Length: 526
Ligand code: DHE
Picture 1 (cartoon, helix red, strand yellow):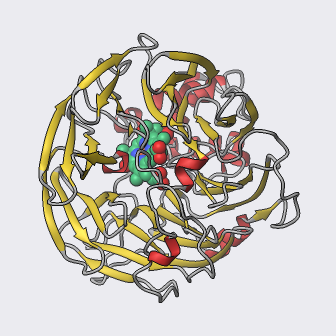
Picture 2 (picture 1 turned 180 degrees about the vertical axis):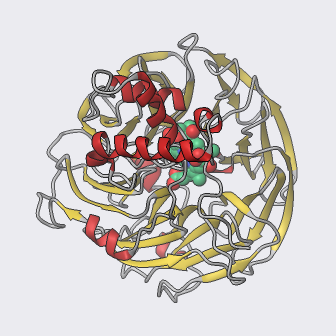
């Protein structure tokens, strides 16, 4: 059965209580009134059809991170440091409330976003090759950090040695997923939940190109040679391929299974040793692999991938043709072994995880994981000569450690609540995991990677969520976010665990070190 287009929206059909209390005719009138209000006050920025414009899209799927009472507050008071002004003097409380409810209802007809729409959204501010090729700063260009600040939708560029800010620039509304660097670390691509891909030139601190891949996007991936970008969408159900130079759209892959069913795309990943993109499909039992053309020379050759990554590729078709791997379950949220031969995917509905051999397409193991393992947050390290992977759970206070040779469970480490992100570094004896959900969200655990015991629990800002760690390129220092409007990024000594510095930031979320990301460091996400 083909799913309705809005399936999975966090706020599916939030029908207004005021609408329920009235007759269908009155309800129609109310809807017409609120639509008029929307067209008069909101459409010029958010689009006549709520698909977004200068402001974000106002559709249920896009608003899933914003509670309705927060939306009402934004309508009344505006959003600081953005173009969104408050409408308290122009709209009555009732009108504001009606608008805040209506934007959480699906539109009458299914929104579309075609290749023509993508092309029309495309803007190149500085064509590839038009800006100087040398960094205009003295900092080590491979030890920079990008910090996404979700409070006022900005990004900070930090020197990874001095922690001075080199730049702070506005991002699109609600970035999600890690920004992805080109292998030389010069350019970075950001993806927003609204579907925007923004390419930023770190050496010149300029946004160089933008394009909108979809209406509700999950994330983006960049090919191992930095030449292609792939976007994964919930709405429409598609993957979209771009030339990374100027973000020219190349191809749209409608997400339709062999059986004709349409699917949301949960995420797309780059698998550099295979020379391919791997996509997770939410509503069909398939994993997709799309190989990119082979580069003429290897581009990344260090980090825990000791071989030049392009040379490791096990096939050489590279023609962007789709390979479908049939799987037994709906697989979501992936983790990959270091060589990208094995994929670990979480099965829908808390049914554990499956290990798939990407070469043969066969399932080789079931991982006994109850609940919701957050595989995207996993890290690996060597324990007694064997590689292990560790993952937190989204609904349990546990970190599960698996042996990646025989996929046996080594240990379940109990934590003070469910965690979201886990991080380490090859040079650090510790792995860090937050306690994102529940009453202990101010806490962060430090786990000894050899004894598998929690050796320290920090609560650096009582009452405020502390989450997401990223190490510097050498694994000597690390950054931790205090996830609050009056927040900060805290710099720690990775060995002594002493706090070194606190850099004020506006609700910082993820942090991304150029070296760790481009070298596929074992303790971080890619
Ligand atoms: Fe994320 C990465 C999925 C909710 C912040 N998140 C990812 C990735 C996936 C994912 C598949 C890896 C993609 C990548 O980096 O390219 N996230 C999901 C969900 O399915 C989930 C649970 C529900 C949803 O509605 O999307 C979800 N994520 C959240 C949040 O609520 C977070 C905490 C706040 C926010 O900004 O939305 C959040 N997700 C992040 C961050 C990363 C991320 C900061 C990148 C982490 C990294 O270090 O790479």
